[in-house]
Length: 470
Image (cartoon, rainbow, N blue to C red; front, side, top):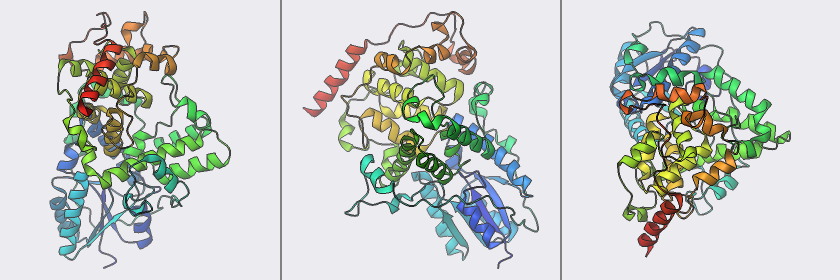
C-alpha cells in the first residue's frame, strides 16, 4: 500500500514551501502524481484570472521539474478525471488543499464522498488560510459578523509555522499522459490585452518571495500611511500571489509579525489586512450567498439599476471623474487596481450611479489577475452597504475630495489617463492598446465631461436610501 502512488490535486496552491499537503506527503515517502484539472468550475473563471492561472501553472510545472517531478494536466469533470488517473496509475488515494468558495465546496464534497465510497483515500488539507473558517467562534458559539471582534479573537492565536519545501518527492514508476497547457488557450479571453498586462505580473513562487522580501526591507515600515497613496508603491503587491497560492499565508504572517516585533511601524496594519482576508473567507464559509446575493436580505428591495450606458462608461474609464477613470484604466493596463481606488470606483458605481454591486463584482472577476472570490464579494458588498461590516450607505465617497487627499500631486491620474497630460506616459497610452477594438477608443478625443454632478449623485443616492427605509 505504501508504494501505491498518491494523486496530488493542485488548485490555488501553486507552491512548494509552506504547503501542508506537500509537507505531509514528503513525510509519508509515498510516490506522487501531481495533477491539475481544468474542470468546469475552473473553466468558469473570468478572462484575466484564467490567463493568470495559466502563467502560474507554467511556473509551478517548471518548479516541479527541478525536483524531477511532473505536473500532469487533464481537462474534464474533476471526479471523472481523478477516477481515470486512479485507474491508469494504480493510485490508492487523492490529496488536495482546501478551497472555500461555494462551487469548490460542492465539487470537493462530491469528490471526497465518491472516492471514499470506492474504498480510496481522500484527504483535504489546510493551507490557503491561517485559521479554518469554522475554527473561529464567538463566545456563544456563532460566527463573527463584524471584523474588529474577529481581529481581537485571532490576533493572539498561534499560527502554524511555514514548513520548508520538500527536498524530494518520489516519482511513480510510470507517468500518465498529460495534456499540453498551451492547447488549453487559457489566455484566449485576454486577446491583445495579455501583452499589455504581462509586464505587470509577478509570476511564481520565487517572484512572490522576492516581492515579500522587498516589502519587508522597505515598504512595511510606512505601510499604515503609504498604502492609501495611489501613486506610491506602498503595498506589498502580494494579493496576486496569495490568490494563486504562490506564497503561503503563514509565511507572510510570520515574516510580518517578525517585522512588527522589531518595531516596524506599519507592520500591525499589514497584519490586520491579512486578517481582513481571513475574515472574508470566514464569512464566505458561513454565509456563502455573499458571493451572489445581498448579504443583508433587506437590501433586496433597493432600486439598484441594472446594465446601462452608465455602467459601460464606468467599465471603460470614461465617467469624467479622473480618480474613478484612473482606477478603471489601471485595471485594464496592469490587471490590478490600487485598493483605495477600488473603494472609490465601487462607491461611485453603486451610489453615484445607483448600479447593482454585482455588475462591478462581475467586472472585477473578469479583469483582475489577483481575483479572489471571498475578497471580491466582501469588498463589493462593503462598498455598496449591503454586506457585513459595511460602510453605511450614507457614507458616499466623493471622488474629487478623495483624489485631493490620496493623489495630491495628480501623479496617479496622469499615469493612467492620457487625455490629462500633454506628454502621456507609456501606461496611459497602453490603455488604448489593451482595450477591445470594439470600444473604438481614440486617445485624441477630449476627456469626457462628468457623467453626473457629484452633489446631485449623492442626493439621488440618499433619496433612494431614504425611500427604502421609510
